[in-house]
Length: 187
Image 1 (cartoon, rainbow, N blue to C red):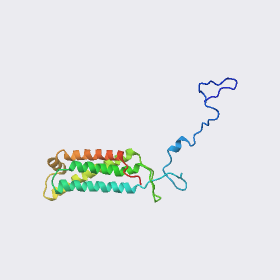
Image 2: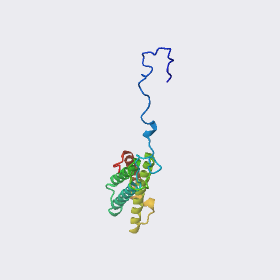
Image 3: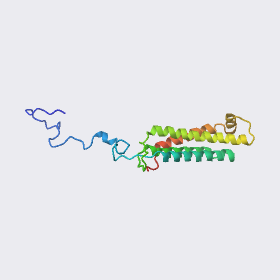
Image 4: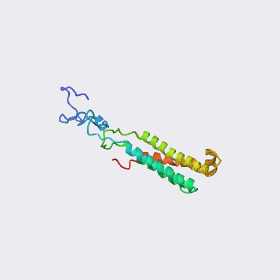
């Protein structure tokens, strides 16, 4: 902003701030985006997160969901509730992995910065799809052990039809929703 020369009168329209107003910010605008690491050579006051906890929890949810899908479709030989199980498993994976998107305190020195939501969403979708695929393969292997003769895709198509691809879509949608709706806790 330019200041008018002293010989020109200052208009009363408010074009210039009063002389007593300081036009400095308390902190630079970039202070809103602090570095996500702390240590002896890093800025303090920024919390970090340990990544192994949410990843292990998401793996446990995916394994539990795959086991439940196998139990219902393979052992019990029914299709009741498979879409619900796939959706809840996908949402659980997404919600637990969403904890990686926020900074949280870590008690160890091996901590990392928060991850972008897009990375978390991709990881959650891949993990959920992998769990459904693993359950479908386990169901086929169980049928093979009982004397089945069909190949993997022939068995899944003749037994479940479009249910397995629908499970994959529902699990992926649940994981995408969960990774965007989370985190369920920050620490």
